[in-house]
Length: 468
View 1 (cartoon, rainbow, N blue to C red):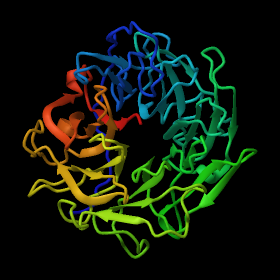
View 2 (view 1 turned 60 degrees about the vertical axis):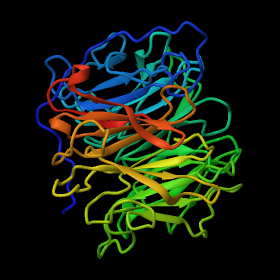
View 3 (view 1 turned 90 degrees about the vertical axis):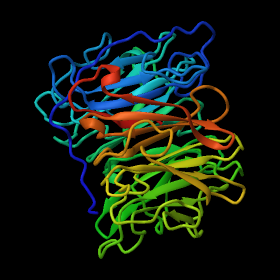
View 4 (view 1 turned 180 degrees about the horizontal axis):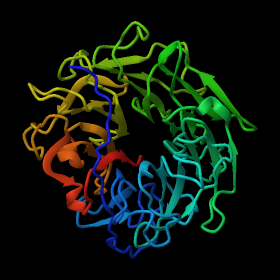
C-alpha cells in the first residue's frame, strides 16, 4: 500500500455550547481536569468544524470524566464565537488544530491552550494564533489570546504545535508554541487579565510543526523536544532543550530519528524516557527506520538521555508485537503514555492510522506496548482495530483509526483508558474509548463518539488532535 498524505475534507462543521457538570469540592489541581472535580477530562480538536455558517472555523470538544468515564452527554463545545473567547470564527482558521492542557493561572483548575493554525492576523493570511481557555467549576469557558511574534510569515502556521510544562523549575506552568517560521516560550504564571508573565522568541530552530515536553532528568523542570525534518536528516532531527539553572541549553541526539514523541517513565527508575515515533519507511534519502514505521526509546537519567546509548527499537516485526511491518503503515505516527494496568510502569499506545486490515486499506490500528523494569518491550503487546471483538464500529477504507491516541485515567480507578481518534470516520471523524484494567485495555464498556454525536456538522476533522 502507498503512504497517503492527509487531505482535508471540503465540507466543514458548527459548534455548540453545552453546560458541563459543576464541581462541588475544592479544585483537584490535576492537569486535564478542567472542572476540578477530581476526574481528568479529554479535550478533542475538530479544526474543520463549522461555527454556525462559517465553514472550517474549528471547534474544541471537551468530554468530562466521571466515575463511569466519559460520554457524549457530558460535554462542552467551544468555538471562537463562544462567549468570552477572543477573536471571531473565520473560514479555515483551524481553531483546535493543536491542544495542550495545564493549570496556567494556578487556581487548581486545568486550562487548555488551543492553536488556530491558519488564523488571519490583520491583512496577513494564515499566520496562526493561540488562545488559552480557562478552567473553572463549570468546565472550560472564556479565554485569553497569547501575544504573537511580530514577524510571523503568511501561512506560517504558528501554533501548529503546543506543549505545556514547568520549563524553568520555578513551580509555574509555561507554554511553548511552534510553527513553520517561529518558536516561542510563554512564561508562567499566567493571569486572566494579562496572560503570561513574559514571552520570548526562540528563533528559527523551531521551524517545525511538532513539540512535546517532559522531565527527562528528574530535576523538576520539563525538557522540550522539537523534532523537525532537515536536508540530510529526513528521519527528523532530535534535540532536547533543558534548564541549567541559569539558561536553556540544547542536547543533540544525532542518532535519534522521529517526528512524533512522548516522555514517560517506562522502566520505573524515576526518570522520564524519550519515546520517538519514526513512522516513515526507509528509502534512499532516509536509510534508517523500519518498513511500516518504528518507535525508539531513549532512556532518561541524571543528565537526561545519553546520546551514546543504544535505544530500544520496536516495530511490527518485533517479537510479541502483533501484525507485520508493511509499507506505509505509519506505525508510530501517534504516541501517548499512561499506566494502563496500574503496575507502576508507563505503557505506550502506538497509532498506525494507515494500517491495512485484510483488504481494507487505511483502516488503522492501535498497539499497546507495556513498560517494565527492563524497559519497553513487545512482550504481551496487543493491537486493536474496529474489527476487534468488542470495539465499536467496523473497519472501513480510510477510517484512519489510531490517527490520534491519548492514555488518560478518566474514571479515577488508577488505570489509564485509551482515547483514540479515527480522523476520517464517515468523512467527519470519531473517537473510541477503551477502558484500562489490571490486565490491560478491555473492550468492556467501550464507547464510540462521532462528530455527529457532539453536534458537529460537515467535515469536522474531529479527533485529529487530542490534548496531552
